[in-house]
Amino acid sequence: MADFRHETDRLVLRDWREEDWPRFWELTNTPRVMRWLGGVASEATMAAARGRLEGYCAKFGHTFWVLERKDDGDHLSGEMLGFCGLKRANVEGSPVFDMVEIGWRMREDSWGRGYAKEAATACLDLAFDRFGAETVIALTLDGNAASWGLMRRLGMTRREDLDYIDDNWPAEFNPNIVHLITAQEWAQRSDG
Image (cartoon, rainbow, N blue to C red):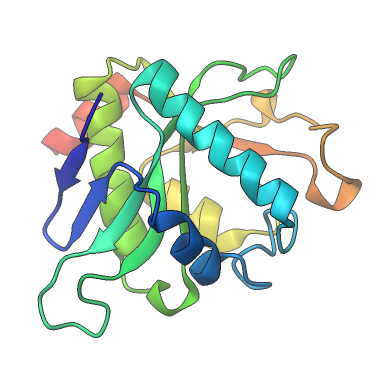
């Protein structure tokens, strides 16, 4: 899916460009942003993450896209805010393997302004309307109240039966807790 671009009232979701990667890591590879994501990433971890994100786009036509603020006079006008988008859950053997997963990562000075919800809403619309998903999951850790709070505000339901241990991460980053929403639930929410 070449040249993906999707706009909301305040935001742009778009494909990655070569020049995006240094800025993305500068903005998001901080102790506070990465607190629930394994801690500040090493060069090898950053390279692996980039490879995965580019691979999702090539294989599925969607990924965690670059998220930018539209140019409108706000102090973050035209700025990269982080990413938001869709991928396939990739922990083999987990109960959610290969399900469509929504995710986001935002720079600190954009927190609390509704950007993640606006971008995630657009991504859920895309998941169900453009990519034909039947369900979408989101993953977080129990301590990350901001993340699971947004999942609930999006209408997602906590699914303890789908929680799992990811052996790629130490104990403090487990278990992965799962929230889920179906296409029907999203349509009813959007219609209401």
